[in-house]
Image 1 (spheres, rainbow over the protein chains, first blue to last red):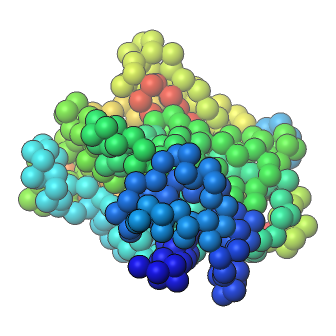
Image 2: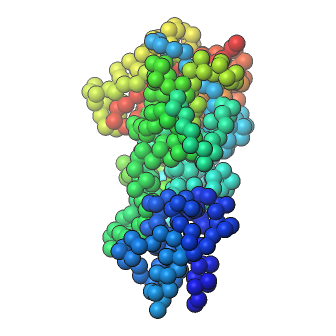
Image 3: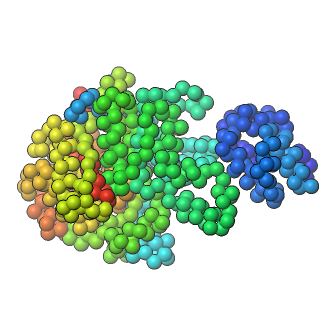
Length: 82
Length: 427
């Protein structure tokens, strides 16, 4: 699975949590999840659970601390997938 | 209200087992439409009572009314409460604020109660996930869904409410109590508008305890529409129900200032508890508490008991019905032949517990505004102690263009009582 496939699936998972749906139109690796997409920070745990289900991986709490942007998600998931 | 500013009702919202939305609910009341249905799940689970009253089409309504982001963490009780609060808000001619607009309405609040709360979330997710050692899988939503205050807090976010936002809980008196609390706050001048009401969801986890107590109707499983029998000699317990109701309670000053349509004036309200004495307990009312609550509402309204023309009773279809009617007669000093009209909305929609007082208050306001008293069904065989009041019980739609003053009360487990005096608005 290449990075663009992963990003497409990440964005799909993020979509229902996004308050600013217009920001989705111009989403890129650098898009900040909390600041640009206005995702409620409490919902990040739900997003992580959805990543685990979608990609059949396990994500530790400390991994999540380093995630800020869409690109961070793609990189973390790519690493877990090996 | 006895002390303070005048308080009126300018908006209504309802999700009821026999109709969603104010217009449909009024049609259902006029038709005497029943929301009672046989439940296969209750039958399979071995309930004695296999009838319940549950609103239909709520999911579709919620999806039309809220965004995916808003719906994500809203469990059933949040959806019920939010739908009726939004309807009451818009029915009052108020605009729904944009989620991106940071302005807060500091003069508007909410008191939206529940008897039990998010028991579906506890039963379907919290308990199985914890016992299955999958705590992490609960995600972020469990707390806000099971905290009692989530019911009102969710609404504050949707309507940008900045005044008091609280969830009250007083068992089956919850809905009436919420309206009384909101009205008092406005009368005191602490708020201009309060969204007041209650919500209760449908789940066997809530109904089971009542079934085990043998207080649910169990002899009419094969004839579900007859299973809720308030005032009847053959009443054998209540039918559990679900739904929500909300009133936009407002100061007369505010309502007039913005030219709002007014349904009725909240002339008086009272709340008390029987103190578990003189027969009162966690599950039974002290009759003196009930009488005092009714009298206190009448006194707060500054009316004579003889002026009360109709009563929307608590009347659940248990052994408490004849005692309730006796309390009304005593408190108002109105015996057979002189007794107000009396009806039980629970004959149509069962007992919606923490929502009952709110949904039934919506019914009461529609009856006042439009001059009718809906049929109290399934009591052709009046209880012998109620039979002397037969002339006061409508078995069919009763047209009452002269209807001006109506009382609504709710009485709950814990020996708690709440009563309202509502007066039709006439400019």
